[in-house]
Length: 259
Image (cartoon, rainbow, N blue to C red; front, top):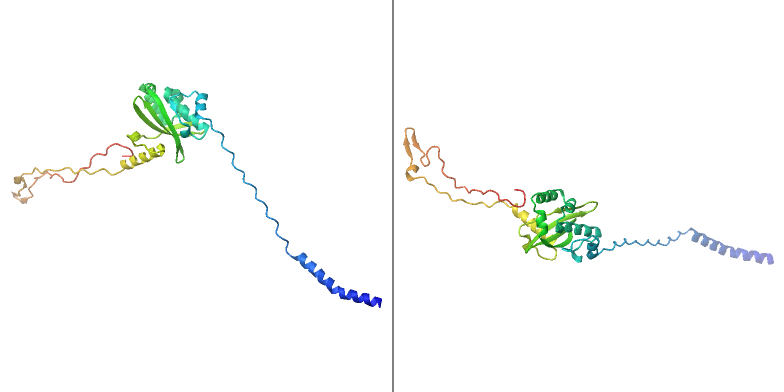
């Protein structure tokens, strides 16, 4: 009896064990859970720009003439550009052609040489009492606009410059009466807009001027003339041409743009 009871007990529990074993096998065959998401690496912020040296300190360090006035809020955004602009206009106000020439573009160097040969540069520089400078970008260029105080007059100039390996300033054309036309906070943008309008105006077609014509043909000359070969067409006679009534176009005036 004891053996039978033990056998019965084992037989009855076997199916349950098989079920448990099958459950374990099913759990083991299931897909593994996805790995936890990898935390993204924090984006490193770019290094802050180097601190700017004040215009007042740069003027002391580089012995810039006090007649050069470059306000802090109108100054370039790097020390290299600030020093380039200060030295450029310092050479102007001191009349230092040797310091100025290497900073000029080729055409402006030729213009400077012409002023020196004509003994104009030193005299003009000596009359400068102050230079008000304001800097800013235009498109991809760095610009410096300067208003020269010469006696009671104001003479504005605009320059595009680079401050890479070699500093170079290239003058921008000055439209007539530009000082009276500049307005707003951004004079550099206003300068280029005025120049654009002047160039567009120069490219407009010339006005057609109608010149009045007078016919001096007499009544007798206008009558037909009897000839051996018939009636000739009187009027102006042979070899003469009646003045044309077509308007005459004037010569193109000089100005900005290509004639």
